[in-house]
Image (cartoon, rainbow, N blue to C red):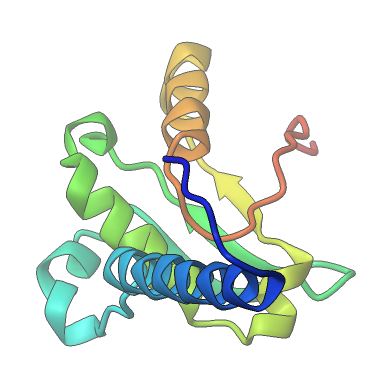
Length: 139
């Protein structure tokens, strides 16, 4: 959309007005997308225990999220998975979360394809700052 303004002051006022309007809409969208979850709101999803914060920390202070051997991991609805991951990544302080998360994926009773599918599912879930790396099991 093009418009002509009479002077620089009017142009500046119009630009500020438009930026404020865009900022307000962006804030509304962001607030809607990342509204905090309470454990009580997703109690049933958390009780499945397909993922949990173990309380452990990495050498750099990164919180550890554990994905235990859960046979129905692929059957967990996407919304449930995203809710639990959003909740778990919101528990540590912003400073700790800023360092990243360490993910422990236990699929020792399954095949490598299951591990890859789990990693892919975690990678495409838009939450937190999780460092993407994998290490072979020790021992």
